[in-house]
Length: 340
Image (cartoon, rainbow, N blue to C red; front, side):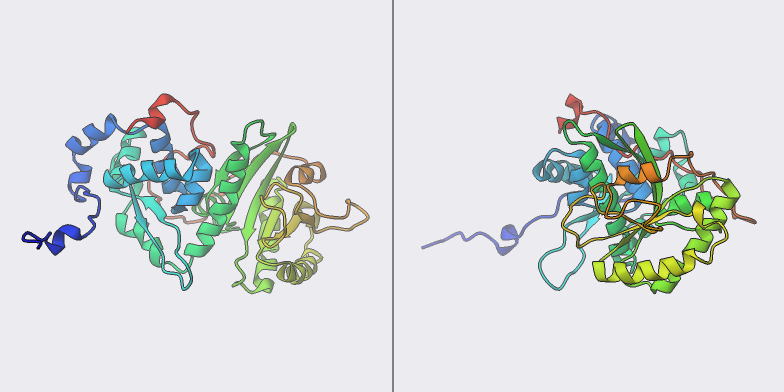
């Protein structure tokens, strides 16, 4: 007979113990963090500030050798309030854990850049609020596009490298009221490089509205005297076919169509990563090779002409002081990455 049963409350799982929001901003807490945060931890915090939300799988692609290693370190960062996390509801299966920047991480980044934390405009409610945003899946999709390129860059003997990755918010601040691309990137491979704006279609936007964005990209090209290709990612080949018809119609209306090179692809192709031979240029078949091209092959069609020039929007409101953008690839591995 069991005479001393274990109380029910002792059988319950326990959430990791975390400091309160107030304690997470104290000097005492940050003094402890100074001896715990590695260069990769700080880089990851900056990535979350820049790109808002990353899944466990994306974080593993970006900076860790395995999913187990990523989960192990992310648990520590969660306990220290460097990152916060949530798990969206889905009707089938289980969604991956999603991570955002937390209070201690934001304060550490501000001090790292010599700023008052209040100047950065960070609010924890806004950061975690993306869990309820209708744009969550869209943002995760964009970030997955670039995390795949980073994973490709990190492979041993990789020939290509992602050197620039700007978020939608950064693009909006830089290019003002002319155009708001979903992201901007630059890819180097075999001594060639291609810069591009990404339009990530999730299947919810009217294709006519998507196509008419080419007018804005033309205005940007004229304003900056720089030709920047536009890559359009679509969910299915069927939608891609319809989108290409709409894009071709609008492209024919442009006065400077040559300054708006466009290529499309769809997510359901058999190739895996965005740098593979999946891009179909939107152009006259007599001018360019037929068939789908790799990302680096587009650089042969559209030579690199320099980074786009920031455009200051008219009557813009004063923005919060901006943190320095992170490099797309994590810092070189050192022994401190494996410290507890």
